[in-house]
Length: 444
Image (cartoon, rainbow, N blue to C red; front, side, top):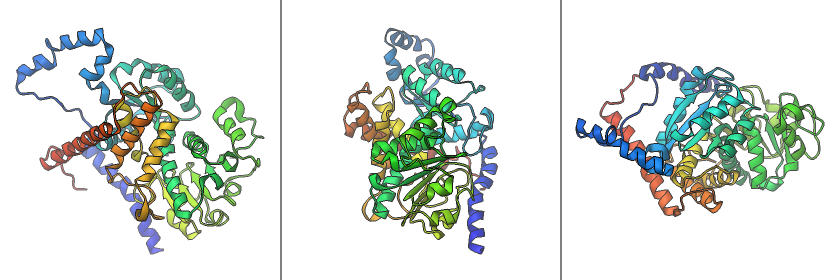
């Protein structure tokens, strides 16, 4: 009991520290110059009158914006605050700390300059029109924390109507990192992806995209069983057809035995469960895990608290346990994916981010942990393994080129080296500012 209390106290510490540090720094990101300012006469180059010549060049050839401005390295993080982490519809202002955190990760892990764009509207048309209108300022769009089902048409339309790559991190980012962890978890337990029964708990944006990538990677659709708050998705759930077309599609594409019931029935006999549903604990029970197949894989990734505590899942017999939290082993963290994916996408100037690019990123991420390094408590790299990001960037960039969705055709080595240099620079800037006291030291 004492050990459980210690674990619970440790799990609560990040929230306590966050309440102290956010007001201390009054935000996590800022804009600083990247050009030399030798004296005030340089502003005649960087601003008026010199900048007019650059503007005229871009007017004649808009593609020069990628060469003359920071557009090539700039991403907008767009949200309406309707589904923020595990907190739900908390609004754009309350979502801003999360978007700032995302921008921090973009910069530190991928060398990408990202900016929060929190919208004061939840209308699909407003979100789509706003993103299309701000395209000239950005090289890519990261959609974030937009509730389902509207997140699906928002992404679909923007991918087809925008000139720059658009992705939804809650779909593609979560899916690719989950797939990477799943690939390695299967290696640990000695099972094949085409022969495992998989229960997906939660039928939101993340798990629907995870199901799609799992099937693309070789999972048997008939062996996949997905649940939502009403139970298992099957072909009798016709009420979904009108309002949740993506769920209804899963009713038809998975669960060939047409199983019914709830989470307990979905887990029974399954080799793996991937849960992205309601914040726990207690959403998944120990006795349900005990009825899974031998050596079960348990991914419980709800935030801020997993559907079952990891130590409870292990007590119930789980061979591999992963969560979405950094304070437990095997964190399934989008931060392992999106910085490298966008780094590679921006560097080859890809016009979109395909499922195949995501699958390539997942495969490369899985390969970063191999041999003796691969263990039940080590199925994924961590954010400390910074070499992961240029590897993912280069793999994604080359895949974009091979799919003919990239405007720049450069070699793997060049993408990798450029990504490595940009990421090292980003980290060095932060380290230097900390050492010089330009980033204040806190008492926490």
